[in-house]
Image (cartoon, rainbow, N blue to C red; front, side, top):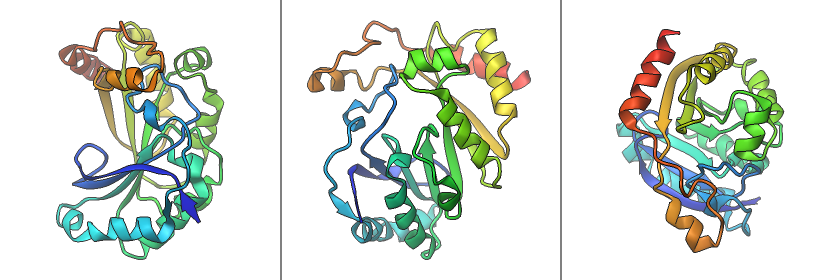
Length: 234
């Protein structure tokens, strides 16, 4: 089986524990207004086989194993190539490699099979209610809820990620509702607030895509840290 991979980063420091090899999958069924990887939205032609990808990852194993790392599958949305992902994870697990998946949970299903091989889920929370989720991503929050329900049946550790956009997430009402959602997710080990930034803005121009947040100011990191402290005390 072949998959569509956009790129591979060999020195990831923020996508799980230790130093990671990060594999970015093409394809995403969401259109998040703050997305910094719009080049990965559309599924491209398959460009790598399972064995080729596994070989590339194993090549880095001596390095990331020394640093308590592993591989993280990101995107895009890796759950849209679920069968390819499962087959790759099966082979990596035989190599005793730590496997993380960075996802919004908005995928195609068959999660129970995938969960057999996963050591960590990085769960991106997009919004806290149906209307806000639709407005921000164009998608349906029910898909993510289905994923969470299946994830809760496992003992897989979860790291929560919340991008904080000014004027949307930086208020008590949002934080209260976020707390309710997080409290329903089992095995949460860590929660990260990520301030919205505009580092990927130039990609929209290059791709000829309208950037809905072109005039949105970046989230102040200090304010974001204060919001995080407030959230953790709730």
